[in-house]
Length: 340
Image (cartoon, rainbow, N blue to C red; front, side, top):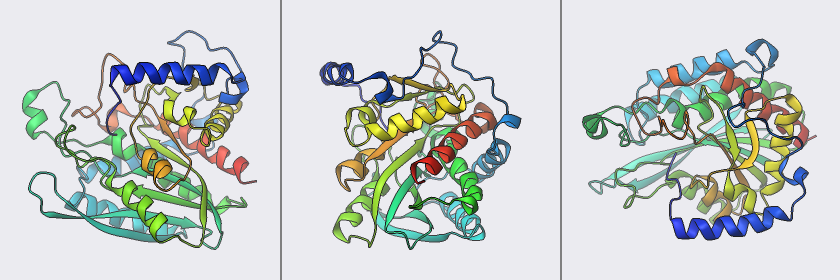
């Protein structure tokens, strides 16, 4: 997961502008159909047995991904992951393709081979839904409290880079039962954060390439909307609405629909309130490809005071099967309702 927007002056202006927009909305426009409890009361009483989405299997996928080690763009770990995912989705009956491209390495300028992995369900459909996640990991845990690890530690990216992939792997097992009117693509973006210096290096290389190709060589189909999953495995799950996704008129209905689905299912961890503005893969999808895409992300991992983000503590043990189950269930039920 890339940078959190921290320009104070611009953020203040953005808050005022978004606040003015939100003040004009009815509660239901953002899926806010009930009063929230205390700030810390975010957990639903649901168990794995209550949820018809296999969170334990999702967690096992997450563990398998992390056993590959780091999955930095252009490395053997990424290549092994691409093989794992290609075999997994092909066995489930999907069409799988790799969208290859090259970029220059930010440190030495040498070419780095990258590939977005695209999984197609009902490829004949001309109107489609895009479900996506990045599947690369950051080269180093550069926010670790240990300065030695910041320079030479291993960043596994269980939540940031692995959790969205694990949810979509399990969702793939449900797609045999999909009867919606729209085609569905899963896209795993490479090069989301091949970043050593956050002030110098470029983010979103895979989603930018995907978006530019979508415009330059238009496919015979159109994406009606998209949903980006990022950092959705936190054992202390709490997913607020992302500020860009709410402020954009074309993505606001998708946000509202997803959060209403969560409320209908009793998944209280989807909190119908705006909190963070996140720079993520949904930006090039919306701004370049004009695919209205919202970001489903739990940026407080595990909370605002203690952050595993970009540290050596982003490991499977700090994620949970139950969190993956809740997110996967909401996404599956939303997808069925949205394409009915």
